[in-house]
Image (cartoon, rainbow, N blue to C red; front, side, top):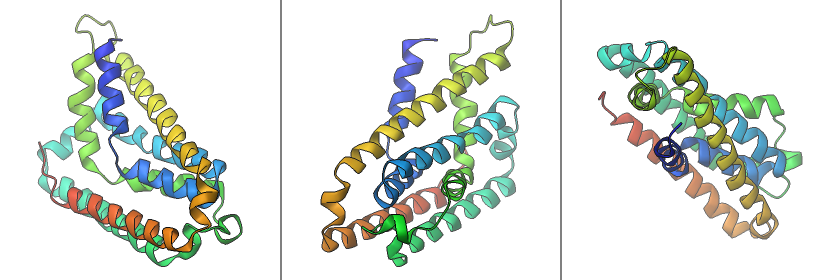
Length: 205
């Protein structure tokens, strides 16, 4: 495993995206537990994309416009739903979150998975990204790609969890100010809309 791979992974992971925003929302609404399960769900959403890349299914998204567009717009619709939910549901991010947010840990993980799952660009990304770091002389390149994907997922979970816990550390200061909470809901909702718009205009590469 090269240092180039680790640096590239870190750059990709720390770039703000759906998973990180979702983890922040969970952190502010549910505390440290929200950080853990939000980060877990966002990380697990990577599994199907890595599997698609490793076993060649991502090639379908790369060559079939219909398959790519169908999954893409399903993802856009879900991101817009997430924006509407954050904006309209005040219990999603508020001081009484542990009482107002009645979702189970499993539901938090499930929504974290779904938030990034419907993004075919991720499958195409891993299809292009992982093979670059596989040794052409490797006896089992599939196993090596799976190993690299596992490292990427571990780094994703650790970074997201750290970001979430950092948000938790200032949670009481933030959520005790209703005006700040109102603007945070708007910012989070706007970010989900922006991510949806970016996905809507994404093209196969």
